[in-house]
Length: 143
Length: 145
Image 1: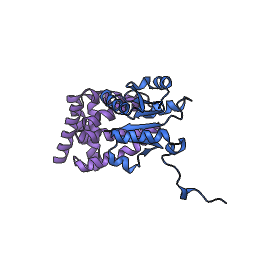
Image 2: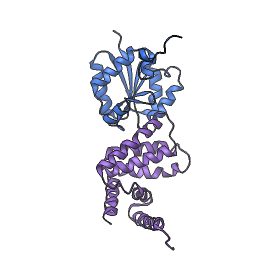
Image 3: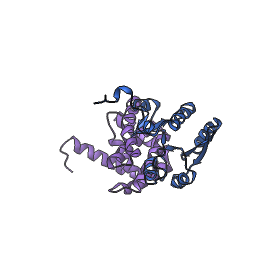
Image 4: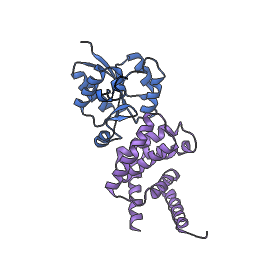
């Protein structure tokens, strides 16, 4: 593949990461780790910034859930919350948002039902998800 | 004095037991706990609560889905609901003025005194004031034409 710009380089590297992670952790975790790689690169493992992101994302998500108007955008925000909680090593938070994703994805439309296995994998082994997600961010920061 | 019935819907068993104990200790409340969200509507229809304490994130059915179900049941439509949630901190709840979508939210861990105070106020105030979060103050009422 001919590389034209930074975006291409990022895609090539992310694809390579995902392929390697798939071999070790399976397809469901690997797809989610790709989202971890792409999650707010500038925030990294900065605890204060991550807390700020969680606070910012939580309010609209909570409003959508309470109004029972959960859309694809809401689910993307919930996934961001799950990743932020993983980077904060907040197991309760990870389990909470994986529960919500499992609940809503099984009833949702679009591509979301296909992600159900990812949230099941997180619920099965939240500690491994947290550990690897944090290691990925740490590695990317050092690279 | 007749005890007011409170239905608590939350999948966390130890938490529900603790809140039930705190509320019943006041002597003013009879609390029924439902730890299975899928059985919550049936439990509410049977128990006929004066108010409902509802967790937001639960497996199989979340608080929003249950609220929507309650709206379709005539008997439950106007039952006041307090949302209990660990998704927001005390600070965020304060910034939201304790309200999300016209519903009162209480962050977990729950301050038992605050919860009792909220229930006392909610169950003694006229319907419109707690539904919309506050009563209109005198200076918000337009002067007569």
